[in-house]
Length: 334
Image (cartoon, rainbow, N blue to C red):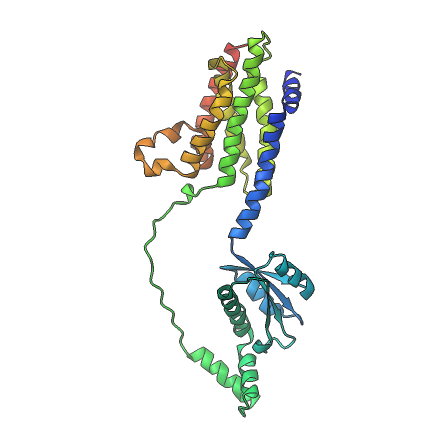
């Protein structure tokens, strides 16, 4: 009953509701930015079905992301609205590379146009290079026999070695454990702020002589913000490890109960929220401890850091310690 009372009170608080809505909204913005930064999106429309060409383009995305269209008008509209960088219309005779046309928007970069042409032409020649070469030879009035030409072309492709040399540039190796996960880091930061919000409500009630229990108040805040965080992670398409997520909630619940026991002024938790977000940015996103070794001890005390970078075993042990401390603190302040 107490849990539901605190939940309803928080939902009546405008600033809490705003924070609950902000996280999914920021996730939408982040997803759009991430999709845009993945590379140029190129439209492909084939006047006749060309499954080999389209399959090759869709499976060999690197700097470009290809999108197949069933209507040339739809592709042109997306180019005009800048959903696509450009679009290609493949002719009925796919081997006629000269018949490939490109659809560009206003102010289109000619450099990108040339690069995307190379990518599309490479796909066409990869699949039907012999037909394209034969078609070009016939247009150039070169008298050749189709069957003899195919045999000669196939022999040339099979016997001519192709070698491309790349100079390897030394790079700093980054372990997979240290890969940043911005959506998960921000979700963890918001959950850390949620326990401070829960302790704020309890501290305010305690000053008025109302003792409902800090643990239930912190749990109510965590539940609301956990749902918001899960929605945001789902929107971003981030992988969610439910077990580790629950371990983070357990650790933060313990921290919230300890904060409710120690802090006497209900304004202090609000002042601590920017500090919490700063710590997450510095140690979980920027990883400043790798740059300044003297700060290496700090992440060992951050529940969010165990969630992002720690092993499951270490996080479970740390969460169990904080959970026990939180239970003890909650009993002491009842």
